[in-house]
Length: 448
Image (cartoon, rainbow, N blue to C red; front, top):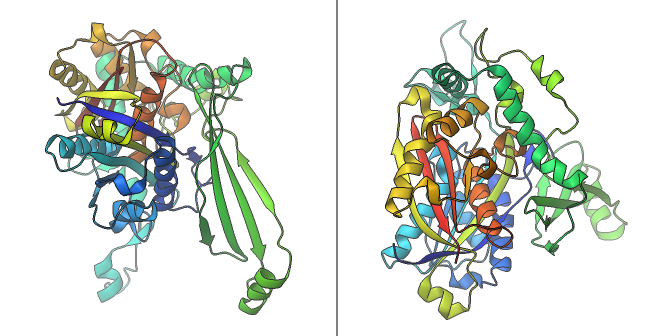
């Protein structure tokens, strides 16, 4: 592969389901992470040749335009094309693959790649035929949950949770072991905080924008994001919302804005919202299975439904020289593989093997592995099949703890690994995810 470099990588905090980021669309979240990445990479937006952005549950009103709007609102030239990508949980990774291909084909030198998701906004839907042309007498309109539909493979006839149950049975993974994986994922990051090892290496304001939501009172929000990175490499994130509130009356609204002092209210997010370090193994062991009466998947050992975005900027070797960029990592190879849909969680196994083979490497050459934790059984099945060294795997927690905003998780993993090269040892890192419907995706990164 021609030298393709990651020159910037940023993400937002991940807000919990119905949490602090629920009112910000996936597009708005993507703009914040993209502006931050451009700033961190010291890149003028006018140098961007293309935008690829992932989004799965199209929850915002402008979802059909997401990648294009992210680019334009981030200052990317009108002449630079954009493409919204949906490879489900692998979407963030897929944007990097597509960006790399456009560079290799000579179509671009600098590419914005990323993923964004607001799962809290996932709409309840009415079938358009029923709503527009009516239903039969006594039937009524029925609403469907688009989020639940997106997490169910109708072809295979299985919700994603059942695919994890299938892997647990196939690989002999008990509920107790799964909960231990949750415990490790949830506490590995929090332990850094408690040990006092969270001294900031940098603290940068990365973007601002007005947002408006409707309610009993109108609310305008200016959003500032700050990132802190501790000495061990775990990423702390903080978001400040500066909120102005005024009565709903239009005349009163104008008067308050123009002539009266506004009330300032602050909400600070010091880290991702989904981790729950206050819980215990005893508490989570009492939770009931969700998908099977005698199953092992509970709310505690499945990935968190969250909101967030991440952006990775790729550049060719020529662009690095031309614009004086500083690479974080080199993209060595990638792979997308298919697998049996009813055990879709095993997808990272063939993807990782294929990506390493393309780079002329083996697992013995890999210093870090990050596999998206859709479910702990899925992660453990992959670890068992690949015979992974757990001291090198998901070192700072995974999606069970941090959350899994579908289109953004690949971007989170790649951003984390790319930045880790600046703070940790090792020359080869691998990131991967399973994909609903029976696929896996992986990228191999090398130290520059």
